[in-house]
Length: 169
Image (cartoon, rainbow, N blue to C red; front, side, top):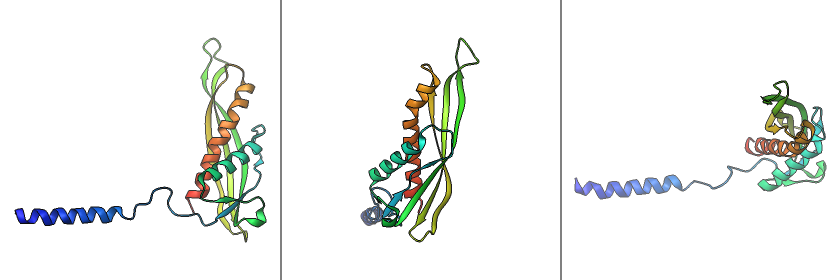
């Protein structure tokens, strides 16, 4: 029995070390396209001024990731990302204590439809819907609260778009 302990421990150590030898730190694999052009987002929703905010936030999220290089023109990129903002929704989450007809807190949702095309217009991602939501307290009024929340909502949506583009090839 004692003679089996050492060989079994050695075998267990070998199996454990070989199992961990293929572990890679970071995101798995590389995306198909090495260069990506992000087209300006088309705003078909009622979100005020959201197109430029989302475009800038998506470009920033993709550049922070570092797996793709952003191209300045569609001709110089292997793939291009098209973003269309399709829906902006508000949902009342809490009413005011002194007047229940007035909302105190909203949930705002922004939905985008993304398409990724390669250089030869082959569809890589076809009209995938991406949604992001943020809560808004309207103690100082709805318009200023939404104005302050829109960059945060665009940043959240950009993170979801970057994840969809980079991690599901």
